[in-house]
Amino acid sequence: MGYDRAQWGWALYDWGNSAFATTVMAGFFPVFFKQYWAGGLNRIDSTFWLGAVNSGAALLVVLAAPLIGLWADRAGMKKRLLAGFATLGILMSGGLFLVAQGMWPLALALYLGAVLGFSGGNVGYDALLPAVARPRELERVSALGFALGYLGGGLLFALNMAMVLAPARFGLNDAGQAVRVSFLMVALWWALFSLPLLLWVPDDGGRAGDGSGLVTWRALRHTWRELRALPMALLFLVSYWLYIDGVDTIVRMAVDYGLAIGLGASDLLSALLITQFVGFPAALGFGWLGARFGAKPGIWIAILVYMLVVFWAWRMQSAAEFYALAVVIGLVQGGIQALSRALFARLVPRGQSGRFFGLYNMMGKFAAVLGPLLVGAVTMLSGSSRLGILSVLLLFLLAVALLSRVDVARGEREARAVADMAPDIPA
Image (cartoon, rainbow, N blue to C red; front, side, top):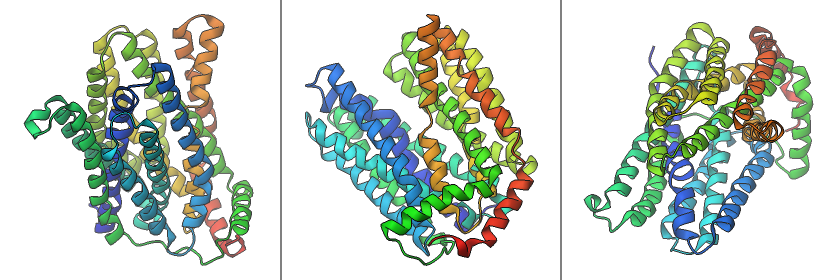
């Protein structure tokens, strides 16, 4: 079964904005900030400011995501909110091209705005999934988005890497200019591939209502209370937080291990590229698996693989193992994300997806909070970094215990019942 135009348009937005996640967030910005914009600062100060902005951006997203989701449920607002936040992210990303050497406060301010635009747009993007996919299509369409995200982000990142490694071949003066041009290319790429969604994807209606601050906060409190009528959705949301926390902790752990065994920046970026391109077909495969057997079995498989990865990383010794680990993570990372989004879409009322996906995105941003603290505490108490790494298994075991209690069929019935009570929800 193929995909219709609206589904392709929706998924191509992931192709576009994933360039920001790969080239800017994961790839060039951290290194370029320390070596170019903040080159005049000592390493401790530059690390502090970069960490502070990343933490501040995450906190702002955590606070804003539920409110963005509520506004998205007002009539015709999902696409408008996505367009507004995407425009913010695009302009801020492109603005990094203009930042001269030494202007680190301006670089951080633009980066903060770009992260907010990226994260805020994703709330509206996720909430549009039920608008483009019928219930039987949720897993396949969700997986298409992540698959195109891996491929699109990976292709532009590969080109940007080639520009940095051989700037003269592209008519550029040096690697620094190549990085700055890459930021501009990300903005153009993001803007171009946002157009199909804006042109082809219908908004899913929503309700007219008062968007004032008081009413919005009342509706937010109502949404949290309403989760009591959606116990399967709430149970899954907590399970999701635990295993995604474990997933994000493993990603960070793998990078630390790579540095510890002597890999350089080019090796780490190459491993990131491997993950991107392996993630493309793997996400599609998980989409087929979810459509055939359901999202929950696919999530079980991915969690099992991640638990094996923890054991592997615990014993890892060589650079070759680091690259192999990147391949294995690429096989399941997009799949667990795609099927999690699709399963949650089944457990929340259609037509009210914005506010619930606001909570979903909030929980996602809380990820990698508990895991690093757990690893650090166990390492300190035991005196062994390997035991600290092994402690991540606790997150997956807790997630498995909760996920085993999620009855998807019951959750879908609960979502339909709440949807029937929509007029009682504050607008």
